[in-house]
Every structure is written in C-alpha cells, then in structure tokens.
Image 1: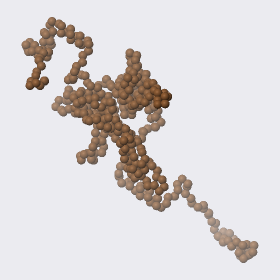
Image 2: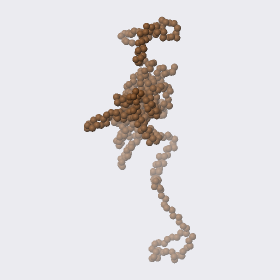
Image 3: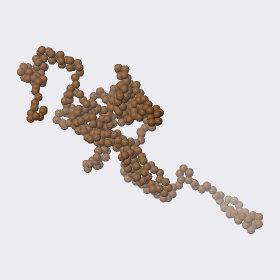
Image 4: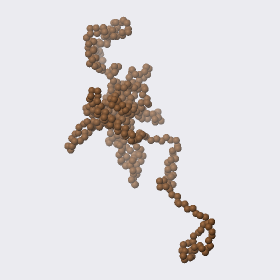
Length: 420
C-alpha cells in the first residue's frame, strides 16, 4: 500500500500550472492485458456463417454411406505412373519397329506398312522381347493396350514418308488410329471356370457363335454443353459396353450479377462426339466341353472397329479378350442390387477354329495330299481300309466292307427337285 498524500500535494485542476483534471490514485496495482485478437490464419466467423456450417455438418452422423468415383483419378504416385506409362510406350514402339523373326525380317513393321488399320501381335513374340511388358498386357490390358495402339500410330507415322501439302511444303502424313489384335498359343480356359479372379485380365476361350446383333455406334468421346453458360466439355467413354462419367456441376465461375449454373446442367451434343462401330456376339460352349447331363453355357462378347461383321452365327471361334462387367438395364427384381454387374468379354483378338472336330472344310498339307494319293494307288487299298474298321471286333467282314463303301461311296440324292 502506498502512503496517503496530503491534499495539498495533490494536483488540482484549479491551479493554473496544472490544466489537466485530477488523477485518481488506486490502492492496488492494475494488471494491463492487451486486447484479445484472432490469429490472421483463422478469421472469426460471423454468427450466420457458423450456423450454416453447423447445419451442413449435422447430417454426417445419420449412418448414410458417402463415396466418390475414383475411376477418373490415378491411384498411387502420379510421377511413378507417368514414368511407367512413358517407358511402356517407348518399349512398345521399339518392339513394333525393331522386332525380328527367326528368318531375319521385321514382321510387325512390314505389317504396318502394308496394312495401316490394324496389326496382329503374338503375345509369345512380345514375351520374347520383354517379359515384363507381356506380363503387364496379361494382367492390365485395359491400361496398356491403348498405349500399344498409340505406339502403333506413332510408328506408322514415322515409317510413312512426308507428302506435299497445299502450299507445296513437305508435311507429315496424316495417319489414323491403329487397332492392335492379340493372338496367343496358350490353352483355352473353360467358361465354367471364369470367375472374379479373371476380372480385368486377358482370357482365352473357345466356343460357337450362336447370335450376332446389329452394328451400333459407340461413342468414344462425348461432347457436353452446359444449358446455362453454354460452355463445352469433352468427356471420354470407357471402351466396350461401359459409359462415360458425366460431372454433376459446371466449372464455369459466375461473374457478378450472373446466375450460377444449376446441378446437372450438361446435355450431350451428338454431332460433335466421336464414335466407333460396335457389335455384340453370344458365344456358347462347344458340345464336347459340356459335362454330361448339363446344358451348355454362353457368354456375351463385344467387338468394335475392324472386328465388326467378321463373324456369323454357327462359326467356331477362339477368342482373346478382357473379362469386364457393365451395368445392365434395371428390372423390377434388380433395382436394389446396385453392386451386381453383368459380365462380358471385350474381344481384342479372335480366330476361327480349324480343329479336327469341327464341321467346317478341312485343310490338308501338301505332304498329306501326297500320302493320300500314294495310298489310293495301292492294289490292296480296299482290303486295308476294311481291316482298319473295328479292328477290335472279330469277324463281320461283310459288315466292315459295307461300312467302307458308305464312307467312301454314295450317290447324290435329289427329291422333288430339292438338292440335299
């Protein structure tokens, strides 16, 4: 405590030398604190904004499931993914340009020069050139096959010579897209053994084509137009039977006084979109592959571009494709099954089977034809053929001779002017 001072010593406002008003002395010290201020990085929210934020966050504890489509964002390290894609593109170009066969020629480079639309690549050749690259094609064909086709287009452009343009100057030739067909000598997989383990991987199956649809136009890039601000955006489509991911909102930033774009403002512009031909096939199991007492199974196939209208129903096929899924049209029984998808195979290579058990025309080599002619000139050819029929059955020589005549003889049957 400070001792009290006499009133005569206190300054007075009446004294001419002290114009200021008298000060009040307190008996206890005063602790002065600076005014409380908010940090610059966290400005204070107005009461209305705090109430709006609280109302927006109030619905997160209701038990609903929220998700975002990650298909349009790359997974993992973006820099490592770019390096991998760049190195894969470089290796694909080296393979198409420099792969040599045992005879010393360049099969794929010559195939690109003579046929500029597509080229058939054997996976065994790619495996001999780079085993890691072939393994990536087998495990992730949807990611590396477009790189392979891009490499084919670039190699074709480098092989073609420059042409004279409208101004007389030499310009680079315009090349279209190159489609890559894959072929393999691996064993076929049974339709009954294909499951979730084969999803998004290469599979090889054999069967009979039992149905073929009409050719349709499949969009590869869809051009979208905003109804409000008239901005244009191009969205890529998934290959095969997949669709496009259309954004829910527009990226346009409204100006002061301009009405913002509503939710789902996009409409498709068919005239400015890009399309390819698409056809669906239905492949059924071979009769010899169906277990006893069971019905044959079938699988849906999709072919595009240069594979369209190459197969008719009734043809035996051996196909290589990517096992994929798509969202089928919803029915009353499947409205609640959101996660259930319809499987199909996107074909990247096919060939007609020429097995011994097929009903198609047979193809013999020159050596086999020479052997047939030598056997036909033998004097005991008839007796030799009869002895080869049912050798485990003793006797019945006349029956075996009749069967031999039925195998190699006969006459054309004509009934009522109808050829059978």
